[in-house]
Image (cartoon, rainbow, N blue to C red; front, side, top):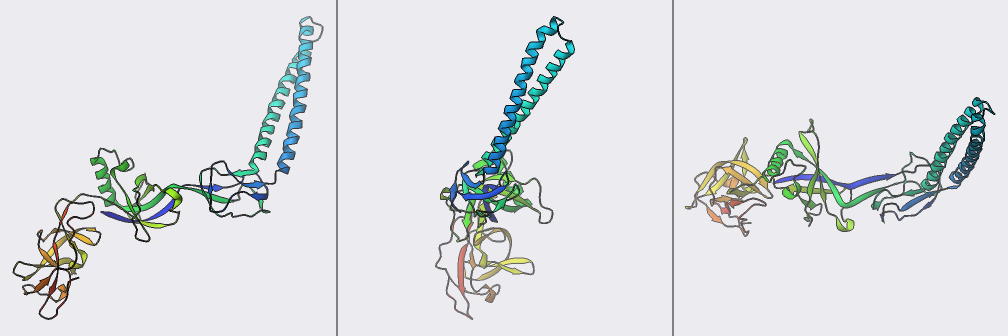
Length: 357
């Protein structure tokens, strides 16, 4: 079972910036509220843009009048040139003038379109559906194209970023391929992700992977992963921390013991096992992955053996003890794995009576 610290972020984050310069005259949204794509968030004084628009309309009308005159000249001189009543060069000049006037009209139409767009850009709109943040500039501020007015984040679904080790990446990729998927990015629901919030509550929705970074970070040997979770009601917000967990491997008939039953001694790990005759035996074990509060024992311990969870530091190998079972139900399986759990046993030693926990 893999377990990683994660940071939440919006599925899409859009910085809202104006496309024209001017003074802010109105804010039309509630900070922290939900906004829709195309909704007007701010308004910039439109009068300078409207003046430019009126000017370009006049320029277009003038260019269209010149083009109309050029067309009249061409229509008049074409039959005259054919009858040799006027020089051919006169008709050629008329045709060239008409072509130039067409270009002037096209240029004026483009200027008019740009002016109309600029008038429309005085209403600053949201680019996405989402939750709008605090306004960074207030009414009366002079803004330009580099000004950031606010940000809008799409929160449903929400994106969660975390880092996994190279070994965990290989294990997850193997699971994805075993389910007929080509790679981890396209694993779909094959790799189900569970999220635990900062208050230790398990989030009811499961997530799936939507991004796998192109390379392993050389400094840490880890790979950046992004997952998405449904977020109805926008409960989750960018910047929150959580823990992401996923099953990286399936262990058949694994032996689980509480972590507190394992002692480390000079780089080796030991547990105290109690035989049927209540005699303690110190056993060197090989540890596997951690499963919540338990840990997998890969070798050195047999299924069903009792292990000491309290008072093991006072027990010597071969010592006769009076074990007491703790008031806890031993879990038969580990989360997302098939496992056998060794009995959890606290002990009484001749030197000290200790109650099971």
